Image (cartoon, rainbow, N blue to C red; front, side, top):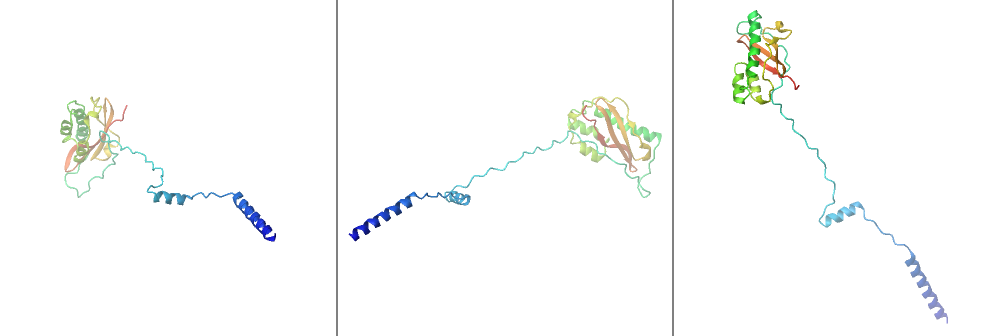
Amino acid sequence: MKKILALILTAALAVLLIVIIISQPHKTETPTQAETEKSAQSQGSAPEFPAPTTTPTTAAAEPPYPQGAKLTAPPQPGPAATGTPLSWSPRAKDQAIRAATDLMGVLAKPETRANRTAFNKALEGRLTEPARKLWARADPSKLQLNKVRGPALLEAGWQENPYWAWASVPANDGTWRLHLHRTPTDPAWKVDSMQVPGPR
């Protein structure tokens, strides 16, 4: 009889233990980001990341013709300079005005602006060599100049230095500014910078 009660008690305890185990909630483990990346790499695929965005850049367009440099008066040649020292005279002033006016008259001709060959040929002997090389890259067809409306006018301060002067020339597209320069070894006035009027 005692053996039977012991077996019944043992069986009841076993059933109770099973019920307790079944009734307990099971925790679901969520894989960490590192585990997810490791798993993705092991399967031959890398985790996806947003691609960096780039802002397209636009190259600045080269102007069709040079914009005249802002020049300051060059120093006058010293006593050791070669050539005959220059000075202002009525003739020198007239030659400076004529050099600026003649250049503008040539540039205003349609045949001068027809192509670069004719344009570059018209600049020979009228521009200094650095200025000629600079303007050789210009597109003459972009110039709006077609008529000179009067002779050049030397700007204020021209008497201060006999080797350089600014001249203003009125034209159909506005007032052009020409910088004239000469040296004792090359006394003929030549243009070494031209400032084209802005758009109107």
